[in-house]
Image 1 (cartoon, rainbow, N blue to C red):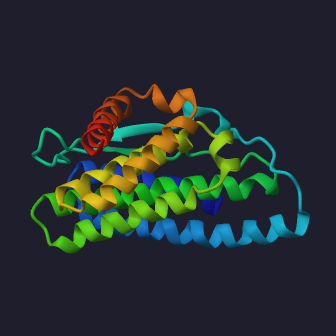
Image 2: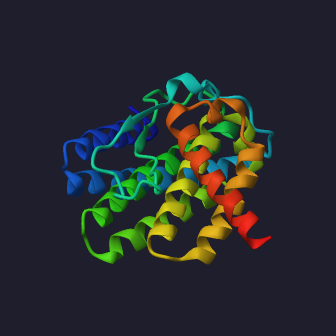
Amino acid sequence: MSLFHQASGLNNRAITDLINGNDKVAVLSMSNCIHILRTELVKAEQTSCQQLTTPSPTHFSDAQVWKTVRIPHLTSGDEHHDIFDHAIQVPCCEHGGGDDSHEFEIRICAAAVIFNLALAHHRQGLRGGKGSFLKKAVNLYGVVLRVLDDSLIEFRVAVVPLIKLAAINNLIQIQLAIGDSNAADESLRRLVGTVRLANVEALTDPTLGRLLCRLLSIQTSTVAAAA
């Protein structure tokens, strides 16, 4: 079993722990998973630099291998604050592309795991935990967006816009909840830009679609009020 395959399984087992309320175990597993992927990414980047080739298609281009699983008890208690409460499962399959595509696969997997880790901290913060949990969630959602800040990734894999939009959505929910209106406005603008570039597959997710409609209505109301 490759480290890449091992990391995928570790993430998916951590999701089960989250569902069962074993937050500490889940966080530890996802942290270990990220460490494995970081090690693999360094190797892949070195290989990519040596070969200087154009990324080739990967088995990750099939959106059907990606699934989301609802995590319970992820509600803000405010009808206007809708959290994307689904963790992202990583397909447990061996690396199928060439070395030039492996870097992209690892980055996408890492973004999914980091999103799940952010979701775990987000839930702990909403459960009345210390403010540090929400702060950690904000930082992690930001890391997700930085990891996926690459147009080549954006257009090769359908799940990427979904991860990005889900991360921005949840980031906005925390910013609105803590009263950071300036940051929320900036995130809303980023959301609009991402929606414009997103592929159709990402926007057809029923849960995400409902949340985006709510957020975009908030953005429209804000613009109207400013005018």
